[in-house]
Image (cartoon, rainbow, N blue to C red; front, side):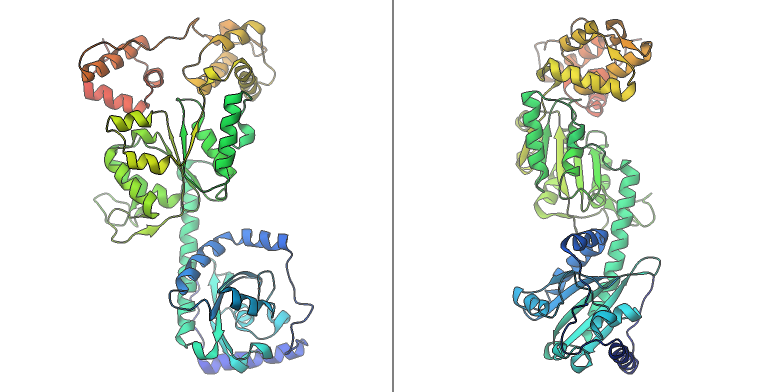
Length: 517
């Protein structure tokens, strides 16, 4: 990484004089901005901002901190890309308007061949921190101002952009350049951290989220209404609570909301709250610093919130989150800050939360298993995904055709098989239908699916009735009888009970239930 040092005043003065000579030789006007100054169209500027998204997002955060020290009425702060295009200007409306009169505004290019000697153009040319005072500006109307600019570099040493601060001479201190140069170094480090976390998040969570609203199949009134609610939710950054039985497609909806939302270029991090052991939950969610505990990775490790910064965090099976973690999650939702294990400081995170559950949270609140205040924080945009049995025959047939096309486009479903699918009530919902079709294709000749290939019972098994007795005994009896009904198949038992597989394993251990034989 480059660590450019500001030149001594004498050396900088020499560079400024040389720049003046080049400006005159190129015919740059010292009295007005030339009509040939390059300017981007609105679409080009938007594309350029997107190309420099990390620089924009991180740079703007540091600019906000500048205004704790500098008055926005008296100073403008700018982010310029490595080609000299102004991407972002901050300050009061009045001062931004004043600078715009001289083309210092988003979209304009400020290289030496466009405008002559400025702090921005000389910083771009020499890739060093620069401060230009008063009459050192080639442009006469910029005289009376002091401008400071510092380069921001990529990891490989290439110029990434320039950070600029400008204000009236009398208000600027020589230490301003030191502050700008220090901020530029911090921006470099933060951009690297953002990119590292993004790469790590993609590694940990798999590929980028794939599903969009175009992938969600169904036309029943209930499902169409759910889609409409989800599309509206995608337009905002507000927290979404997805509710529905196991297998209804909650994560698919979460991916679609993310991909259609304002943070779609950020990471999408799914977390199964029911699958993480309680003792590891805090480090998984908030990360830890170097030396936080015995066995901690050297250099620490970011948690899911930090990995999701700038994107979406899916808290799947939120109803199974341990009670102590519910308190900590509530604090993050209230403050937007996280604290890694072993750290003495907090970090701001910009994360869109989507929570999902197959648990009735209102009942969980009554049973003191879920915090009411957390529920209100999550229940801002509630969306209930209907079970497949309530979506009607047309949706079941369309989904079956969709899965056949996905796994074997040359295969077809005969009339009797279609009727059998439509008459089944699908306790495992869309996931069970997809698995059934996939299995049937393997059992068939690859040309036609018949009822024999579907391997469905004539009637869906009903959940066992609840026996009388103490609540704890009732719970144990229900779990045991359901396990016996499914041949101790955990994957089938969990959705029948309406709980996650991790919760089922925990309950089996808690009650000492063992498979016979």
